Amino acid sequence: MKKNLLAAAFMLLSSYIFAQVNSCQCPENLDAGTTEGDAPQKVFTFKNGRQIILCGYENEEDGKAVYSEFILQECDSPDIIGFWEAMFTGTVEFKNNVIFIKEEMQLPVGPNRSFVATTWSTETIQYLDKSLVRKRVINRSIRKYTEAEIKATLQEFEEGSAKYKGDVEDLMGKLFIAALSGSTKAKTYFDDFDRFATLDGAVAEQYKDLSAMLSEFIRN
Image 1: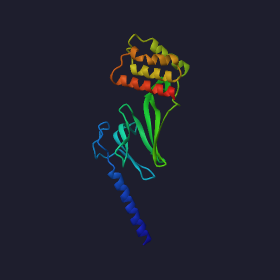
Image 2: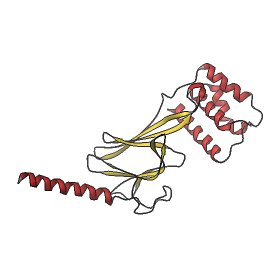
Image 3: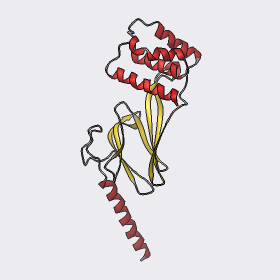
Image 4: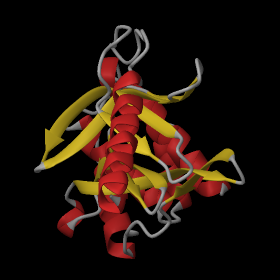
């Protein structure tokens, strides 16, 4: 008799949880490309019973799911927690009752200043004392350039013509890391980079984002 009651209770609880998950659907959001009623890409269920959904664009890179242009929203709230734009690409994981959002970027910090996938920042979202708390930290352990690597980067800039004809994104990224490594000359060159090379479209947006990132890294 007791086993039957426990089984019935478990079935009711499972049905309730299933209903809660399935009743939490994406809102209409032009930025995230969702229409009202769309199924979320992810549903995060916290120990306090609250749920947060992820709605937006999911892709696969190197065998793992990455997200861009997405929103997070509490199931019982009409307001979104936040929107991560098109220039953002990262992973979203749920561990120990905490959502981890890691921004992944291709930065020239590999061997011979090659571009490799690098975590730029990590944002955590969790409930503390019934309140939703967000915290974002910059990855300050990104590999810094050696003096030789900084010198090589500065030379590449200085040997360019009035309007650089080479790989603009490549040199821009290397100047960014050289400046981040503490070179004041590299920062000066980076700050003047839009006068050194023709920047338009996505490259101009990338330069704008890198400039903001460098300021944030230096400021913090």
